[in-house]
Image (cartoon, rainbow over all chains, first blue to last red; front, side, top):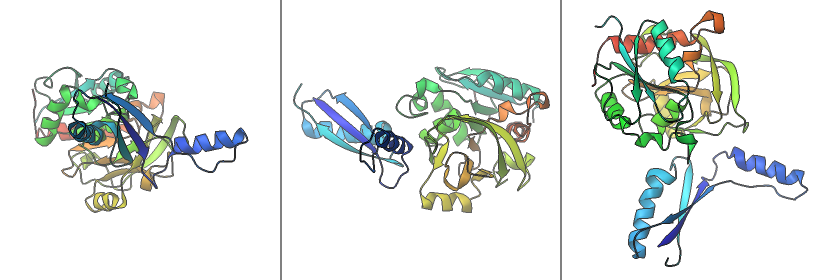
Length: 81
Length: 231
């Protein structure tokens, strides 16, 4: 099944990329005061069992996709496919 | 005791300071041996290991995140667990952090820029296996060249490192946003050291500052003591 892992800089952790994006958006004339830049990983998990997929994705995120010291993650299970 | 300790310098796909590291080690009296990321073992008789700078695996995902899965890293982990001295420079430092052999993480520089400059670091602790050649408070001028050198650990971790003498080097002034100006740390046992500045680029007065000599001599002396031999 298809899944998406969203990885974000943890709250309170400096995000230089986000700050640069805010500055650039303000430069374009947009009224914004915050942006945080994360990462998105689409994963095709080889199982049809949502619970199994969720457990596996949690481990993937902890061990590789995110660095738990500075990043949080959320898992979204997609439609069958 | 060995005359010229054998120090393995590991090349990952994307390493680019491996050659300089070998030259610098040879210049300072070590026997540098090339090692390859895909090897399951370290070269025979390895007494010290360097993970050099570069952009292993294109810095995909996060710097160092993929390199820690290289076959040779199991051997590096075993060598470190046996007490062998391991030095990670720049990308090597990032790899050791991702591999869990060193505490903390290296984030994007505060300035969002790649920084390339000579910086001054202070020796904060000589407690590690590398410290025999250092004086507390000694200032070393060594170049940096990195985009992700902004060291971070939570407050509890920093206090723990401070108490354990694991903060090896601090920048004398804020360079990249690193928490507490931390430039280099060791593991708890003191036989794994990582730092962002490049000691291998600072060993010859003809080419600039020579602050790297003390750092690399620290590794060479640790290797000479022959705590662990691999391969």
